[in-house]
Amino acid sequence: MIRIDFCGAVGEVTGSGYLVQTDAATVLVDFGAFQGGPGARERSRELGPVRPDRLDAVVLSHAHIDHSGRLPLLMAAGYAGQLHATPATLDLAALLLADQGRILEGDLVRENRRRQRAGQPRLEPPFTLADVERVKASGRPLAYGQRRQIAPGISLRLGEAGHILGSASVELCIADGGTSRVLVFSGDIGPCGAPILRDPQRPALADLVVMESTYGDRERPSAASTVQRLREILHEAVRNRARVVIPAFAVGRTQLLLFHMAAAIREAGLPSIPVYLDSPMATAATLVYMHHQELYDAELGELVHSGQLRHDLQMLKVAESVAESRALNEHEGPCVIISAAGMCEAGRVVHHLRHTLWRENAHVILSGYMAPGTLGRALADGAGMVEIFGEEIAVRATVHHLSGFSAHAGQAELLDWLSEVAPQAPRIVLTHGDDPARHALCERIRERYGLPAECPQPGETLLLG
Ligand SMILES: [Zn+2]
Ligand SMILES: [Zn+2]
Image (cartoon, rainbow, N blue to C red; front, side, top):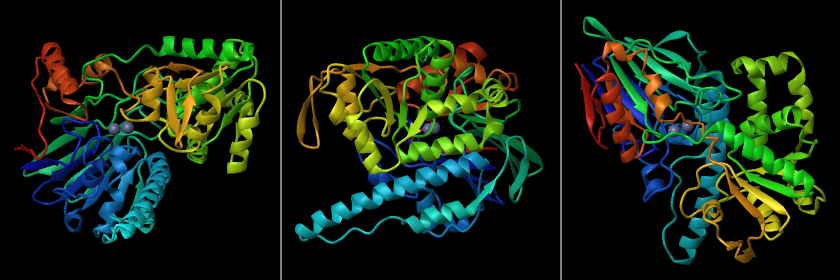
């Protein structure tokens, strides 16, 4: 009997974690933080059904915090085993977890000062940066397609998921009694045909498939029209000598934007325009992307081979210090500034927006989903006035919202992902999606493949006999 407990991401998109138990072993696949929504911070401090001292191994599908964010908590609670993931995932997770750790540490310092003034007891951190270091030290890189025994009776293989660099679908082959069972956890599934990364690999064999359903009820906006719109904005900016500020997530989105900008210069006759990367995290993540050229798709591989990529990257200028970042405010003439954070809620980009939004001859490009309550959402909703650092700023710049850069597959691609395994009629479980999204996908799977899909609730346990 195999038992699976869900540690999050059921009926929501964050907090991924699957505890897989057999009579002989216990393995955890992903252990992400909860983001947004009520109680996210408290829930991100909970181990749920996980007993760190009883775990044989941990597997990480990809580096995003909603999949990796609770790994330091695991270390703080005494986990001393290994963490299996692709080499690129381990590199990116080290960056993202250290960043998360620093943000949490800063928040805690502020919160404790407030508590001290109010005569309340201090809060202790759920984990420290030393625990982040322990996550790093526990990493055991595993290349795509290779098999490794990770616990008694359980072997692991990782397949390309096409979502961010190093992202994988997780295949566990489990000896259970006299039989063997194959469990596939999709991780986050990327779109097909996107630049930089290879397309997601479809599972071919499984008794149980646990799959994401982020876009289960909709198609993503067309990537081609989004790229076209980006090119038009850049051309207009060059013509009018305008500044373009692009808030972007440091991992994945930033590298995709850089790729599209280089292509616009190369293919669409865009006059060379200085592109500033102003985010230490995005710079570090871009270096990880450049370090793992073995993971590129054929198109980018060819650009490396021909020396074009090296040439393209000459357009890129990196603002490292805060002084260099500040100096960009005085920059005359057209330029593009890519900076984190993606939803404009923190980081250097907030300073750039403060110095840009009031200008008529300027563009701001929002490049993805903007959560309610963020500055990015206010801008996407067309606010005429926003508050930044307690100061009222008039929005005179042109704000564009381009939503076709998503790193998630749309509904049709999610359905296609099941095409090879569906004839075996595996048990299908939908997670990592809001309820309307996973229920819609459930319906479409029934229509197309005649298979029932399950939508477990939080706290539910699944048994595979
Ligand atoms: Zn992800
Ligand atoms: Zn995710």
